[in-house]
Structure formats: C-alpha cells, structure tokens
Image (cartoon, rainbow, N blue to C red; front, top):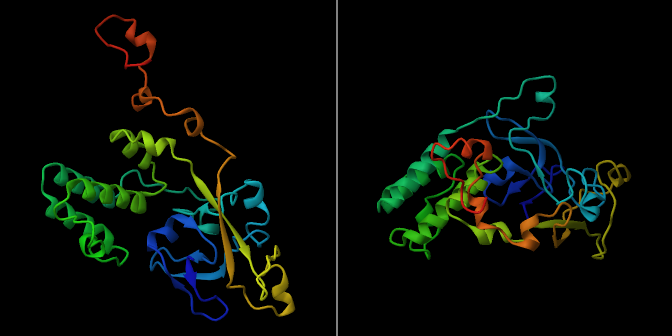
Length: 258
C-alpha cells in the first residue's frame, strides 16, 4: 500500500507522494533517514497489529502508533538525543505556497501554478496541472484553490499550518469530519491474520519478511474531538479578546459569540 519490496531483498520502492514519508511513519518504511540526501536505510517499521513497533496499540488506540501511523517530521532518531532540536518557524516552501495563493486570488492562475510547481519539484513531482489533467486547474479558480490547500497539507504537514488554513476559509465541514486510523494485519500464506512480530519475532526462525497485509479503516475514538459529535461553532473562527481589555472602554468590541 505504501511501498513495494523489502529491506532484506534491497528492492524497496516508495509508491506515494514522497512527502508522506517525511511526515509520517508508515508500514514498511525504513527507520533511518539521511537528511542530507533524503535516502532511507536500516530496518523497517512494523506497523501491523502485533508488529515489533505497533504491537497491539492500533487495536486499543493507545500510544504513539494507536492510529496505525505516527509522526516523524523533523524527528531524527538518536541524532536529537541530548541536543537542542531546531524547529522551523517559516520555511521557503510556505512562502512559495502563500505567494501562489495570493496570485490565485488576483486571477493569475498560471502564476499560481508556477509557484506550486517549484515546491513540488523539491521532491521530484511533476507539474500540478499536468498531473491533474481532468481538474481544469488552468481555468477553474475554485479547483485550483483546493489543490493549493492540498499542497499545503502535503508540504507543511505537522508544521502548525492546517488549522489556520481551515480557519481562514471557514471550513466548518472539515472540522466536523470524523478522522480515521488504519489497522494493518499481517497475513500468512493461507490469508490468515498473524499478530506476531517479524524482526523481534519469527525472523529468528528463518521466516522471510512479510509483504502481504490486510488493511482495515476505523474511526478514531481515543481521543475524540468535541466538534465531531457536537458540531463546530462558527464563533471559534475568531478567538475572544480578554474581557478585562474590553472593559477598559476604549472601543474594543468582543468578537461575535463570546
């Protein structure tokens, strides 16, 4: 689902947008990333139920691997132990995508696409319009806006941007949308689920690294979000001013609903 091949055979090929592997741990992904070259090496994450890394957490929705994924962006394994980790506040990619959005809103769709393509080229992806020929991105402003926002998700994931994008465009439906996790089950030659580890398990008995899995989508319930079941109140698009500041009487008006 996320890649083909195995570490043992040295033939791993990634099958998704490369930025997925920069941001999230997925089943089969190698554990060491060279931040200079972008190459991965080492053993693979075992994210199936019972695997070395996930263990039974996806079934109980607990711990780092409770959703079947885990964050990895800017985490450098043992490289960051006893070190000050530098987290970027604003990256060049965000500036390109912000400029693309501004060009779009002024009607320059071609210019907007050009800026997005600069960002996509960082990870070897083709042009936005060329890769989405049925979406009429060169003429449909609404469709292009959705693609720019999607690019922001892919490029700026876990960088504290998505929440504010949803606020800016008042995406009430996205706030209320139920999120899902992915339970992965390792299958044996007969198609039966095997809840055992490989690297710290039956690898020692000469069993080849598993490559056949079953995927099960599930609703995340631990933790849950208030607005999934109670709705998103539009007043949350704006934060309240401190009432003590409003009470000073110099004309500051409280935001609606607060």
